[in-house]
Length: 114
Image (tube, rainbow, N blue to C red):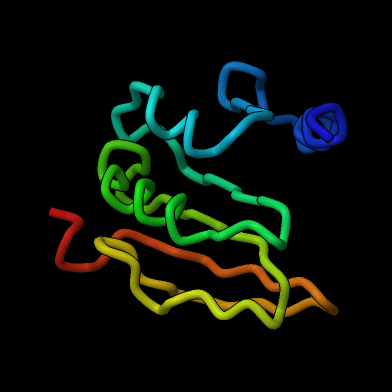
């Protein structure tokens, strides 16, 4: 899966130094990464049977460290799995349904940005 994402980044002419593709357990990554608001986009695509709440709660608790001011957390999930409109400091700004999949777009809450 990472190879396909990396190929698409190459096709979009995104320099390697401006992208990081990580294959691994999201909770482990979130707990160990040292970031300072450098991510523009974080795409989370866990197996549909996963309980998303622990991952979303940890991400939300570190959202200001992980995302830049206009950054997005994009969560892919089954269209029958309803994710909350707000998770800690994050609010859902958009929902895009495509077949059985849905993308939920989260941003840092307006009052949390400053």
